[in-house]
Length: 113
Length: 115
Image 1 (cartoon, rainbow over the protein chains, first blue to last red):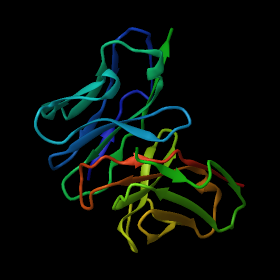
Image 2: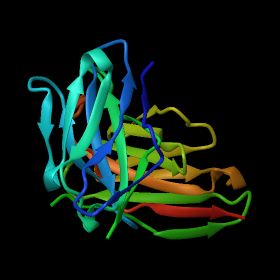
Image 3: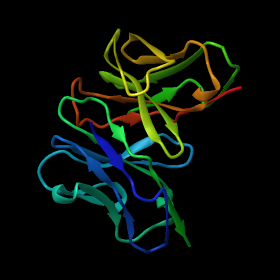
Image 4: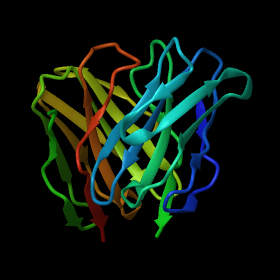
């Protein structure tokens, strides 16, 4: 069975500071990994995903994530936080043959001025 | 742009009522999904459908059923609503049947309160 653990249900950073949101997965087969973002009162939208190939994945709005198999991690980073990044972020995992996603519990990012 | 719409943003129902949540997508997507979102638990899959009249149970199907009579529409049904079904319900769709990597597009959600 697959699972996703997001460390830290709430993360607060200052505007301009580094954003680091942690995601660790458990999977007995090669995973596909996703980060979704949910802005207030909206549905989720895809930030980025890793399927195969390059382990450093770039997404929208300056976010990127690196797949590290040895650490079973897929942490999300952004060099400089912006006020508009305040949202809830979800890590998710899938694998070949599974059409649905398994989501983590989410991390709410707060950006302080 | 892909658009996934849900029939209501907020819904209040009484215990024991039959509740219908509707979802419509406008991009000819093969797959449609229903999730519920609860604080601290993230999103959990209730049911999904990969074709008209086809459905598969997700991780928490108990107390729910679904219907997909047309490709663009996927309904979630609570046969007899209970207070523990108070939650945010999110619908999603994706294009490729059988794909494990395809992007899912989400609706804005329906916040259901069962009294």
